[in-house]
Image (cartoon, rainbow, N blue to C red; front, side, top):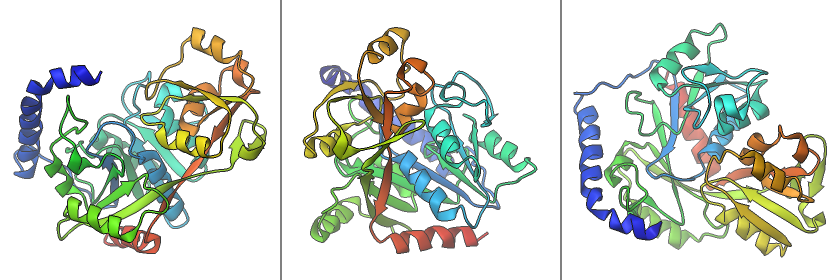
Length: 335
């Protein structure tokens, strides 16, 4: 795969120019963006792959759910349906996508969950509901320039920061680095918990934030409790197990489990992987399966796995959390 990426390097300047020109048309107002008179918060990134968008959306939900009626709007990647879909008791990972289904499972009593590849249309449909949301959280919509969100939160990982990367197909950036200028908040995600202030200062220098931007750092916090549909286990009580992942980057999870010196095999699949009947058959022979919460959404309806399938939740630990929270709430109060 890496060799192919290098072979495709001649395409990089073409991809760069196309995405740069598209952004220029929006920046100059030639292509139109829709702005709104209510809070729309976009969480996204410049790169392909996992930067921690889902945990960030969940952090915002926890922060705002007591004071506002919330809605999440996602594309619904790899879903079987089309157009605008509102999550309800009949929703599955297949019909609305695994990440929106995760939001619905955790927050359905508190948050309206919707999917639509056309974010403008999705926002209009949400605002037409009888229970109109006060705040709409856009999941993975940083490149969806038809919507001009009131607040853009851009994520970039500690291990692969955007300033060290180039655009597709050789690099991982969906657009040139200059796209970071649209962000109001830049969060460096998946940082080591003991990241020092000197290194943070160096990273901020490399990011070179503009006057309208603030930089924060966050870390993944893994639970020590595993959950299934009807029981729990603790990490320390685990014997031999199979780890199943279908996420963009399983490295942090592997590090966490290896640091605990646990005995497991790892079955690694592509991000948003749709499991085949043969793969489910193989998994059904395993004694105990541990997976991520996102993967659990795609696997939990298989009866053959029901009593052996557990997921490990994660949360986000934000440095300067009070400052971050105040910034989010200040933005909402502008409306």
